[in-house]
Length: 246
Image 1 (cartoon, rainbow, N blue to C red):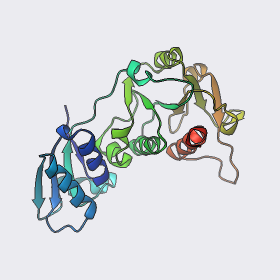
Image 2 (cartoon, one colour; image 1 turned 120 degrees about the vertical axis):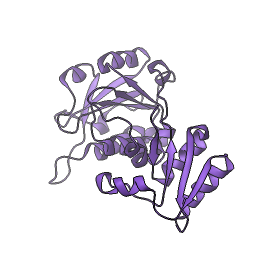
Image 3 (cartoon, rainbow, N blue to C red; image 1 turned 60 degrees about the vertical axis):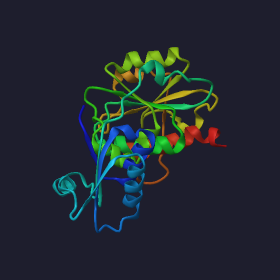
Image 4 (cartoon, rainbow, N blue to C red; image 1 turned 45 degrees about the vertical axis):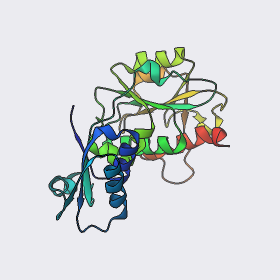
């Protein structure tokens, strides 16, 4: 199994709290005044994880900071979290709750941002596909800022079959499209929904749309008529979970 090199202290601290046995080492700059990384180092020490105090920024950080924008005063070696079976993902489907499915999302920053929002709003789980989708890299974990430790996820090869399994478990499948007639505010709140979000450029595939029980959109209120998929998904999540929060 590959090792992730995480450089967001929030993602590292979440991993230490959730599964310390999967964190093998933490490296922090000896002269760093970053209080969050100090918290990470303390938590790691309490769990018997090796902590290395370094005079300079970790080398991997120097190599990658220009490529993916992740910089920091420390780094940790963490094993990826294992996904759950699709049966377990939908095991607690009931009259309420929200799950999310990705139909070929390819930008790791979008995937990480959605995981973070999902964790904030208490989304029950996320369904992902293996092919033509962003893998769960270090960037995804760092952008999620701990969200990947809080939200169960399942990676499947066939989305259409997975949507049917969700229906059999008691969920209603809700697609998203800018061409839909119904605004998300009109979606019934007395159901357990599996919200399906599509590819950044192409949206939902035709076969995916056919497998949806309903399709909704966000209605623009200004001159800009489209949103980044992670931003749009965040608004959809907030709207669909509002009744639960209240």
